[in-house]
Amino acid sequence: TNIAGEKDVTGKGINYAQRVMDCGDAGHILLSKEMAELLCEVCDWQERLDDLGEAEVKHGVLIHLYNLHTDEAGNHELPQKFIPAEKNATRLLKQVGRTATGEGRKKETPSSARKTVRRKPTPEIAQASGPIDSLAVLPLVNAGNDPNTEYLSDGITESIINTLSQLPQLKVLARSTVFRYKGREVDAQEVGNELGVRAVLMGRVLQLGDTLVIKAELVDVAEGTHLWGEQYRRKPADIFEVQEEIAREISTNLQIKLTGAEKRLLAKRYTDNAEAYKLYLKGRYCLSKLTREGLQSGINFFNQAIEIDPGYALAYAGLADAYYGLSGAYLPPKEAMPQAKAAATRALEIDDSLAEAHASLAVIKAFYDWQWAEAEAEYKRAIELNPGYASAHHWYGWYLALMGRLDQAISEITQAYELDPRSLEINTDLGLSFFLARQYDQAIEQFRKSIEMDQSFINGHFFLGWAYEQKGDAARAIAEFQKVVQLSDAPFFRAALGHAYASSGQREEAERVLDELQERQKHGHVSPYDFTIIYTALGEREQALACLEKAFETRSEALVWLKVDPRLDQIRTDPRFIDIQRRVGLAL
Image 1 (cartoon, one colour):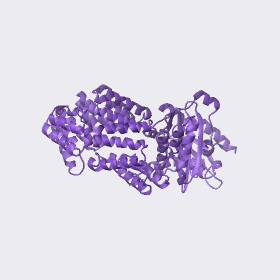
Image 2 (cartoon, helix red, strand yellow):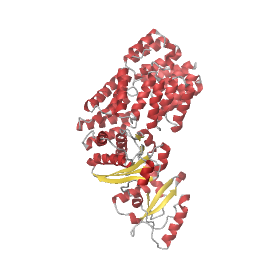
Image 3 (cartoon, rainbow, N blue to C red):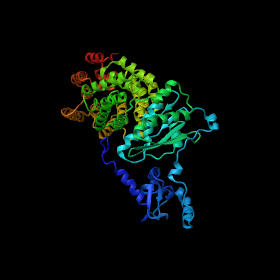
Image 4 (cartoon, rainbow, N blue to C red):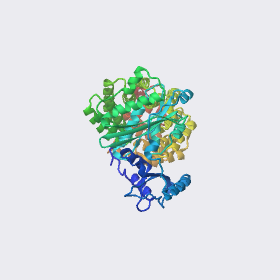
């Protein structure tokens, strides 16, 4: 079990190791490319490694292998079980001939092939390309393959992204886009072209006892050149200096002219305590899992970081995000949201320039306090502080959509999309803007694009079903909602299925969903809003409005949909509905 509470994290590694073993004969010591590189980082064994190239193993998977041998161990002969990939076959035949005649073996080793040195762009390249204005920071590889240090490679990656995204001259792609490449062997130039950026940062992180090894390299996508590279071997306490140096080197080699204020931004530290920072990274890693257990673990890590450094504003911002994540789905809003608000407020008391905390406070003011004008001011402040913060643009766009300001919403979400083009949520919320404008065909097209990116993406199927329902295609709507409830047991999604049953005349099925939700309410949180939409579709106006009043009393987050939710159209003109809408602050 790792720090996020996940189990069976070693199964994938065991499967990979078995594939490597299957390529060797008795006596051979075969290493994957990653392990060979790791070995060369800690000892001088380059001359004992032969590069075999890529092998084709089970299911057609390609693995790059090295053969390790000494005078006492291993076997210098090419393994008979080794099945080279087609592109390596000719090279390997030549290598076998050299080995048989006793000629020198392959000189290129993981260390020599990947050795990073400081390089500056040539004057010709600099003149031809000019300053580079877009960057993708790919997830740093966890070179030790230890699941309990995964938070470190992920956290350092995210910290570099967050730091560089504050530079107005540089577009830095957001976390959710670049992390879709995590765990994949990729070519920097290919990825850069795919993402539409001019530079790519790649690297790896290795923890060896009390030594931290970080390797980074910067590639010019257009020219296919290596702009800069460095390897750092430091104590964990020196992680701040390493991150600052990497950020400086990137800005220098991208030829970005920094103001004094921007230089201070790159060097800014939110804590000087390495242990507090480590706990913060663990907290963020847990939050990225988007599970109840991950959110609760994140809260524990953030609180530990705050105990060490009570002035750690970022830890308070993380705490706010964790409590907001628990609200509604796992905890009643009245229990979770005040804690989220207190944490965000404390973060801003410590550091009012923290864009993340302003954005978090904006969400709370909108979804819980219903202080719409104050929420908008916080969104705008977050974007002013960090124009490259994709989430601030995204959340502000969502806010605008719920306000019915759909043209502005599309503009804001489009800016988020440019910073985070592989974000499933942002792609889906572009479709949501069309949906709320009742442009269902355009919405359906956008929702399908999200699902093409990830067939298991819950919100994609949910909103697609919702659009089908509003178009009157009950069969397709129900089919999508059934997929959703198989992927998630959240009451909100089950209620959507109940509404689809009711609106298509399948009363018995709708009432069965109502019974299920009422039973769940005895043991956990179910928003009264979920009952409202089913009762509305069943034509039970009194029950629907009574549940809507309860939703107001419990400050259900779903009430932000009041102004735009088409499922409420049947009761929208009722004076009691209008009164609730007025009290929430969403009167027309």
